Amino acid sequence: TTAAALAREREELNATLQAIGDAVIATDRAGRVVYLNPAAEALFATDAARLIGSSLSAFIAPADQLVWRELESRLDAGEDSGPIELTVARPNGDFVPVEVTIASHSISGKRLAIFIARERVKPALDFAGRP
Image (cartoon, rainbow, N blue to C red; front, side, top):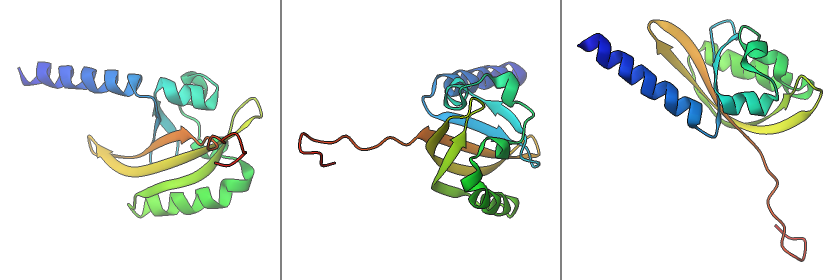
């Protein structure tokens, strides 16, 4: 049946999002987290229960709040963005530089912002100290 096929597709999509190595976060129009995968939990160093329903802006470093507000304005206008560099403020007080790509997407008539994030790592240096 169509309902069974749709349920299978949803399960496959969820399994993929759970297994992907990049952090995937979805927010509603108000900027509240409605979904995140295990990689996002690892990036923020906290569990989903603490993030779901929270404003994602609360987890952006103070120095990047202006950039964040500009991104929110672009999302409100239906524009995608990325990749951009931001700094995540973990609940434990650590700061983590990340690269984020953002897309506006509608699912079942609800507009969501989808964030794909990965930790920025410094390039490896050779023996002479050069990248």
